[in-house]
Image (cartoon, rainbow, N blue to C red; front, side, top):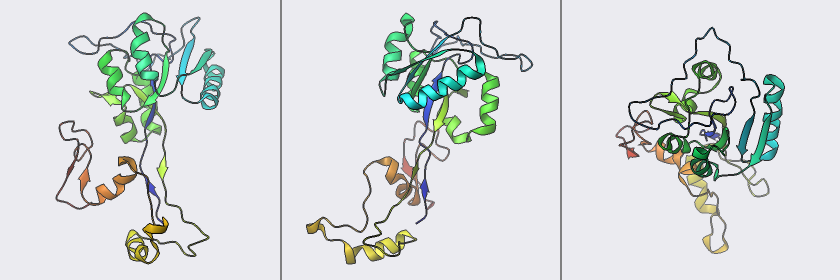
Length: 233
């Protein structure tokens, strides 16, 4: 069965990741802007006495990343497991200066943090390095108005599994699944040839195959959250 892959962009939201704690809240909108441009010839180094607080989802992953960061840059990182409420907590506690410097969150929180004025754009030197190693689509999802506010952390893939106790040779196409399903499926006995979890994440391969485009052709049209195009994908 062909593996179905779609990036799940879980982002680490960085605010001055290499320069220690940034406690001032940048403006979210208006004519003012935060200038993080640094001459490309100037090496980024941590400020003296810099420390970081990292609000994470998983302690094991976060502590490993923190140890690696401290070993490379000499900046101690305190890991606190906050979970999925990290962005909401940052919005409340950030203005008081009691929040974390680096926060784990889902990619859709980038816009929320930007609108709340609690994120600083990532330095151009870091962006240049990320562009060499991270997929463009992932960086786009973590950007607002052309500036990057999050670093994609990992990706997940959707795959199909089959029960070897029931099926000797798995189907290789969806057409074959459709053909074989009626001979096995028995709703009364709760027996199904094929099942899938509910949600747009797992349904997207089917929707896009029928011409559905999320947020337009390039995925960035906020006025067009979803439509079917005439062209079949």
